[in-house]
Structure formats: C-alpha cells, structure tokens
Picture: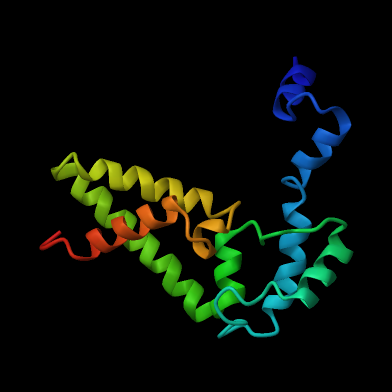
Length: 155
C-alpha cells in the first residue's frame, strides 16, 4: 500500500520522482543557496526583481545543477528583492488583508471569494514567485482584491 501511495505522489516517475519530492522538485537546494545571498543585503535586498542577474543565474545553476528561471518562492523573491523591511511589509499586508477578508466574509458572503483568493495566494507564494514579478491575470486579480480590502469603509 505504501509503495502505491508513493508512486501516486511521484506520478509514477519511479526513483527520479521520489528524489524530486524529497527536494520539492529541486526547490530546496535553490532556496538554501538563495538564502546565502540574502545575508549580503538583509535590510534592503538587491532591488525589486533585480536579483536574477546573469552572474547570479550562472552561479545558482552551477551550484544546484539546473537552470532556474525564477526563485520559485514569492516570499524569497521579496526577501532578495526588497530585503527584510520590504518582505516584512509584504507579509504583513497579506496577513492583514486575509484577516480583513475573513472577518468581512462572516458578515457578507461575497467576501468569501476574496478570502479564498488570498488564501490561495498566500499558499502559492511558498512555491512560486511569478505572482510577484510577472504581469499576469492572477497577480492583477490579487492586487485588485487587496486594493478593494484596503478601502472597505469600517471593516
């Protein structure tokens, strides 16, 4: 039974699939290496969407053994981009927006959608960073929801 569950979890990819599950498809080594860089500019970071220079890209690829297009973590992208100050503000905005949406959804069911989208965003940012650096529709939708929640009178 356990081997069947493991095979299901790695989508039938055998030993290679098991190895990728153990490292979250290579994300853990990438994140560990990126955290080393975070110590170089802990307060202000490297600048918004400025970490993945050709030098960092080459060095990361050499160390982890594959070519990352993104950092695969919105939170890590924020930390390296805008430092501890900006990353803390980012997380605080997300937490307060989620708290506000949840509170509002108890009184007005229409805000349950905002709660669901923000919950998805907070979870998705653990493994993907395209939401904070790319102009895509889900990012636009999340920004609209955050703006709406920021201007709700007397939440």
